[in-house]
Length: 544
Length: 77
Image: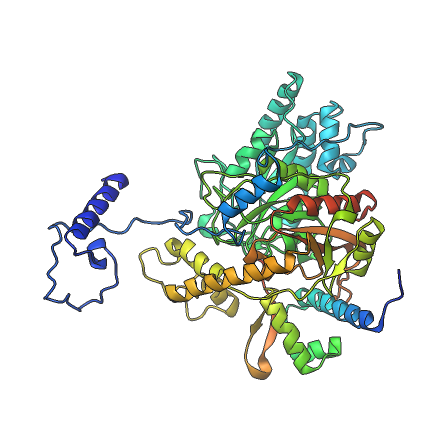
């Protein structure tokens, strides 16, 4: 029997029972009545003779009816505000100009590989290099460095060569699709791409193939980008360990890249791709970007579709670009943001990147752990940074509960939890127990926690009334992933990141710039202004 | 820029200690309250307060109990 017919029968059963005034959970296949407890005889049930249908089976991806909205006043109020504040075209995508190529073309493949996207785009547009040539440069680096870094799950050589060839043909025919035309990139292996494995970093899913494309892959393909690799993710989007081992930091091969956007961080820092797409639920873009010395954007919640991506938390998952400059982040974000009917948590808001922002007009704050030299540099650019008032704190159980729901199909496939082997060590127990801990949280506690979360969001909105953004040393990943605020990671210096380590690492030092909701364009504009006068973001690891 | 006031210097030192601890944690894998006191010069209460704020920010989690309690970096998700 098809599922749609099953659903119709379910609805008919519910309607009949409701009409008869006998709507009960057990009528609907619910489980609120206890086994062995009879229904009160004074209220006889008038159910149809047939067995109630079983509940609709759920996998990882089906979203709940309740949707998170980052704007505390609700998306409706936000839309009205956008119309009011942004003129008559708040949803129109604005083009970002890139400077034309002039001068010598780098002769070394390494020099080409480390160029930021906006320079590669200028080279391709000027036909100084073809997408096919560029794709070979990155494929060679991936094949050479992946055995060391473990940054790629699948290298899509043939497919990438074909896409690059098509990009070259399109350009020759006068069809330049924009700054990402012909640019090779990698995507975190949480995202489905038809015909490729999508492993989620887990051995149990290492042979998972899908027949559909994630929305972000479709939008980047439409923008002309060339997908060359599915990049490593920590197992089920946590940390930097996955079923083949640990993804490493190109700046220090003695340590992991952090995660869970481990491959996107490692591969972009090692110039195995021109840019990469990562995801964050709680730290998974910010942390590997900082560990690997990148520039990255964790966007405001809802700005980029997550359709086709593995779900950890419907109310916290976000998709964002991991690059080697803020301008690159803006170019990539501009190609993929905006509402998608297939992701009910998504929306469109204006993104107006300004390559020459007036920092004097920006209301910038800083926390006590903000790096002084970065704050001082912003002053030098005309800003007037002010200390932040106390920032609210609070957590919710959203990630635990939602991830348990998203992985119920895997953890308890028959509704039963298999026992964890008694001889499992602590790490293994933690790994296997990951999606179990929140299964017993009462629905009431979940709802109350989400009500408190909205209070936290309102408190944060109050703090941000006087600020467009603020510099934070820690990154406030716990708070801002609850509230949905955007964050940019920015290299601000170069030095030893870990002086207490046995193997101190010289690399770009990074901080975070946290934006007000939907100020993704403004934080990237400020980071870009800073990067126009500095070269920390252009340093390269010695991995070659 | 005007010379830093005494209060600014204290705030700056606090920030530097926070940052240093955030760097040390992933390097060491685990640290105890006593180790953090030795590294930072904080009192036991200050360490507990700091670690509570790190836990709220999702940066660390606690393992073990009593004297065996230690802090480990939270794996980003």
